[in-house]
Image (cartoon, rainbow, N blue to C red; front, side, top):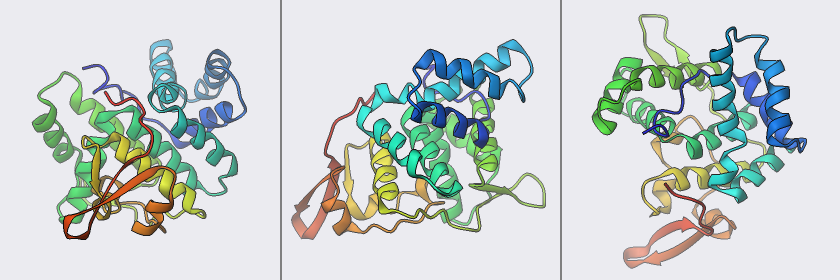
Length: 246
């Protein structure tokens, strides 16, 4: 239950960049938190609010190593070589998919609404979350935090009228295909199914803001995936390594 609603604070992009940088520099968990507190404390007032914000940030970039050590280690390597905000957002997004089932659900709903040309609102996302997970206490507030974070990262944009949101007009691209295969691996790890048709993986609605350079043939060559040809020429893809699936 707590894991479902763990996304209890809005995560600003500079804070995520800060915790990622500290992890990439090799600091241990205690030192990372101590240094991160000095950064986040400039913007967050109140001991309890600061503690909760640090908890969520640490869950993204530190505790995600407990879920999938290989994907976490690769995220650190990719962060060290990242040159654009779009690439860093991919990394934060992927680790949030691993760390928070509610984050994945919200991204899924947003992508489904955008693909169906339906209005994207916090209320609509919250209603779908309640329908899937039940009326858990705090679920609407957690949904609001996810949506606010996606706005801060530039994945969502405010519509001028009312409380509507739009997907970013500019697609999120990466300079290297390694970012693509890594994010797709995170998405497959977070997906309730352990294998998917390869074409479906490349078109997951929760990844709608992102554009990929890879195709099915690239998935076959990637160390992240195992592809098996089934009847009718259907390529099914699963992860080559097994992280923790809760």
